[in-house]
Length: 165
Image (cartoon, rainbow, N blue to C red):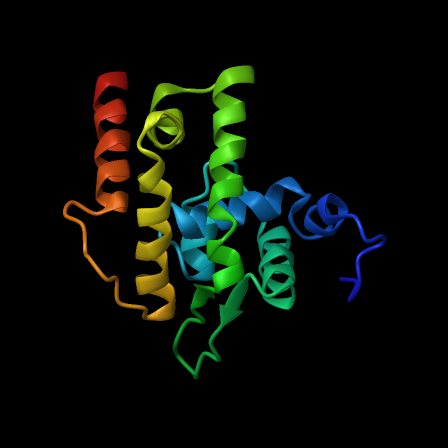
C-alpha cells in the first residue's frame, strides 16, 4: 500500500484504503459481527471470501491503521482489534448501508441492522462507536446504555430472521 495517496483529495485518500469491496466486508464483519479471528471471519462470511483475499485484506487494514493485530503465541489465534480510525469508519458503513437499502435489492434479515441504523436515533451510531471503543480500546463509557446498541441491532436481526423462516 502507498504511504501517501495519489493526490491530496480526501475522497481519493479514503478510497485508496476503503475502496475495494472485500475491505469493507471485513470491516463490517469486525464491527457488526464481533469477529476478531481469521477463522471466524473466514467461516461466518455470507459472501464467501477466499482465504488468500481475507489474509490480504487483514494485512492491508493493519498497514492502514484501521485494525491492529496482536502477536499470537504458539497455539493461540491472532486477534484483530479495531483502532480509533477503524471505529470511525462506522458512519461510512451506515451511509453505505442506507444507500444500499434505497437503491439495491436486499433481504430483510441481512438489511435489518442497516434499516435500524438508517431509521433509528442519530445517537445509536454514537452509542455503537462508544461500545466499540470499550470492546476494542478498553475505553469505559461515561454512561452505559441498557440495552446496548449492539444488543438492539442483534435483536432486530434475529427478529428479521425469525420472520423470514
